[in-house]
Length: 240
Image 1 (cartoon, rainbow, N blue to C red):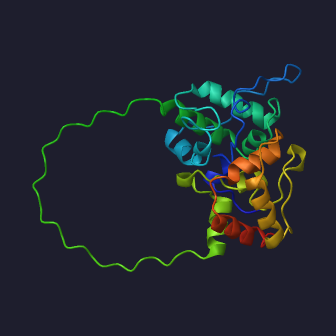
Image 2: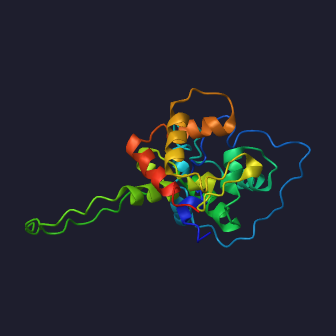
Image 3: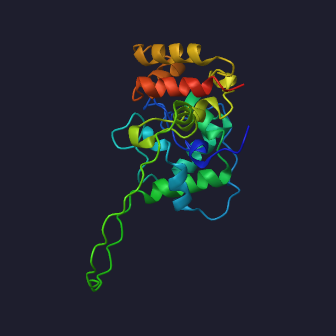
């Protein structure tokens, strides 16, 4: 598998955080499981880097979202939760898959971002207005050519579309499509374009069933259009 992009490594991000709000970051640690090792081996926390990594997380972890809003949560709590998911001490098919791809530094930076996200922005410093200058006439530019369906599918699969609440498929299925069978996330390599499209449409249309993986797929696909599904299917068809 190639280098993992920052937004994918998070969940940074989302799908995957996908869902099941009561289960994510709030379920109790199993008593019989040992406490994860600490401290994390990382450098100084970078909230700015954490904000980049958290791009996919906001699909679910936002005010009014499907998972708990992490805004203003103490960094130590977020770190402990992510380490517990990564080690398997806390069980959740989506969060375990997300946390498994996070380094110690990723966890520290994400926790710093969410801890700072609840703070008030600093008041701007008053300054003397600059003298006005004539506004130059607008320049004529050629609009960018629309992305091909395959390019769109690749972008949605690897990066998602946070502005439209679409989480990256790779958060759970991996950039190579191998999934995580131990967590109940199947491999989609070799599935083919037509079979993938049929499956995606079925998951999007199905009612809640109370089973983690099908429900996660249903909720993740809900904001996607038919064109999105077709594009993602075209890209999945190239995974070998």
